[in-house]
Structures are given as C-alpha cells and as structure tokens.
Image (cartoon, rainbow, N blue to C red; front, top):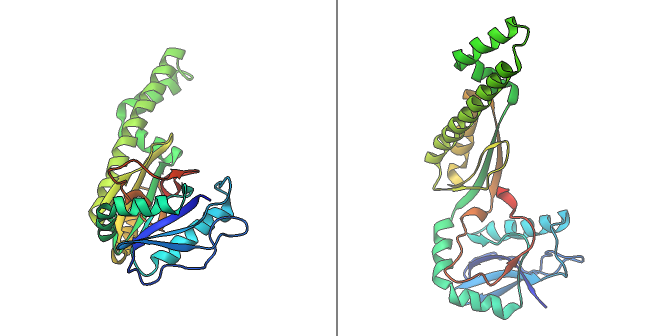
Length: 256
C-alpha cells in the first residue's frame, strides 16, 4: 500500500502524533517512520485521495499536532510515496538538507498576505493624481460624452494609470512587510490580485507583522489586504537536490 506523508521532523521531536486519525474514510492511523536523526509522520494512503474538506482538515490537524512542540517540515496535501521504504530511503538520502531546513524553520511560522484593489477607490485615486485624465474626463463630459475616439483614448489612459498604480502599490505593500520577516516567498500571480506573498516570521514577531499589515491597511484605504496564518511554513520547505520521491495530488494550499 502507498504511504501518505504529512511532514518530516527530527527523530528527537518530543511530541510527534501517534495513533491519531489522518486522511481517509475511515481515518488512517498516523504513525512514525524513523531513519537516523529524522522521522516522517505518515499514514496509509487512501485510494484516490482528493482535496475534500474532511481530508484537508485532517492533514492540517496532524501538522498542527506535530508542530505544536517543535519544528516540522510540512508536506503539501496529497503527498504520496509508493511505500514506507521509499520514505525511509528519502530521509537517508536527503538527511543533511532536511536537518538544515528544520534548523532554519525552528520557531517560525508562515503568514500569507494577498492584496487587491478596491475598484471604485483606486479609480478615484487615479483621477485625483492625474490632471490629464481629469481634464479629458471633464472635456468629454462637456461634449456630451465625447467622440468614440476620445472615449477610447480616455479609457486607455485610465487603464494605463491603474496598471501603474497596481505595480506601485504591490511594491509598497511588500516593501513595508519584508523588514519584519525572516524570509519571503512570492506566490503565483492571479488576475486582479496585486500581491500574493508568504512571509516567514518568528512566532514572537507575528504580532509585529499583523500590526504592520494594519498600518498599511489604514494608510492605503484603496487596498484590501487579506492575511492567512499562522500556517505551517509550506512555502519555505525547499526541495532537496534529488528528484522528488513523492507525488502530490491536489492544491498547494496556503499560497494559492
């Protein structure tokens, strides 16, 4: 039977979950595979695992339990290996990499920040900042709306100004938050989204990050900021030098 992998920890981790339920229906018992100084939190993999709500929550619950007392390298939902021996082989092959990552992530959590524009507010800001657009808008209004070419020109100017504002605001949000983070990972771009960035922070510094987010929000009322966290540091578990030994089914979770 294939093996479902939740995360990797030090073998000396004081409270790895044993016997709790994991993914599957009924839930597969969670167990620990040890190799040298490392351990993998695993269970039997159910057939055709898919990102259903119950299994997503089970995956997160196991990681929360495992990470409560020490660092754990979280695997994304749907990480499956052919068998236990494959996992043990990976732990042995990439031991130095995993131990370095565990040291780097000790005491740290991930916060994902997404930002979007409030459409009406950003249009108002663009008009207030651009006298040429204001003048053309007023000229078209006085001309009963203006000609097709004039309306097209105005629309193109507004689109260009909004895009420029998007780039400026994205850079400003990231620049404001980076100083409080130990590391930064930029997530995939999406239409309509200014920022999709994950920040690795010390648990003790989390409040500072949230305070900084609130300051950015107050200073930029035309930007909507959405914060998710604390999360297991999915975005900062860098792959080892070898090819992956597990396949991943389903979404990448936090950053998408």
